[in-house]
Length: 434
Image (tube, rainbow, N blue to C red; front, top):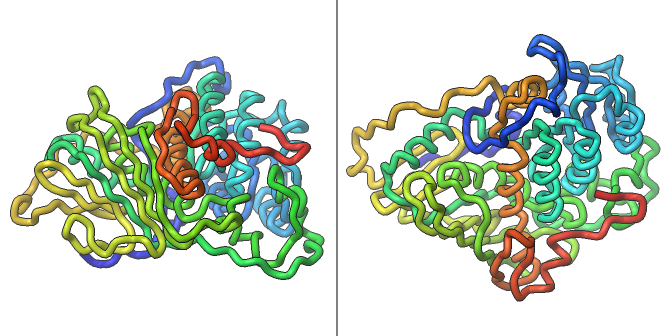
């Protein structure tokens, strides 16, 4: 196989979602009297980077309020949406604009995802949130539970779920072409580890540093160390390569195999740094048999590797920069964002995929907008994406505690591993709540 190109999320924009595990939504939570041709009033939290891309995809609706802690970034967005009100603090924006807002877009660093989304959902606002859904496991469960209770239209920003290739892979795996799958290997050579401190300085006048820190512990501003892009390397703000990429790649086997909560989790990597994420890590999750799951339901051994821990070969096959390998009883299947391949080659020579059963969707963002207006389901709703995010984030927990643990998903407890509690939920700084 030829090397895959490096992934950029901008390649996803304009793609769509289709059918799959969905949360049933009831009419009372939806915007009354709105047809698809009428516009939603959307407030956005985070307007730079991916937030700017999300804004572009939602620009056909009414962008009524903009929030960003960086005044330069906020002003650039305001130039595109001059009628929108500007805020630096999302809490004030939601309080002041509560009666006007229908839905909220959250495109911030990971540590702000849950506080912003939960506040909006408690007000009954539909929510689009970037991946991973939350910074820690308890936050992710809280978001999924709240979205269900409030019967809200929700969507996590895993745009590749919309691609036609993912649909075809799911159909092939679920058809039984490679037999029951007992092992999945997922990897990504990207590296968001090893943050380094710089010289502490007063923050620039355009940056509201205390608001950028949000619920995280107070610390001085260091130019280029955290803001605007390096925050993924720091435990207080990001979730490393695993949090950045696994929601995209692990999504495919979660969808195809009907996975949800693991029974056990363990991880290995370089010695743990208390402040920064690793330059490479391998996570192993054991999933139980699923009654009625597609393509049989045997237990699944699931491994994730990133950075300098990524394999050069999987199941005897040379592999590119990133991908997914399904290892079935009748064969193997490699897949990435743009294609797939079945092994052994001779066995699958002339292979014809099963008839298409998962239809194309109207678009990743359009699906969420329609759900807000009509109550139709979304594929990456917080019920589905919350469980996916929990599994992803558990890998970081296992790495940081340095031991394998059994996972009690119902009670959010690492069995016989009390030291995991500090990583399953975090204390918020005074003035910040979930």
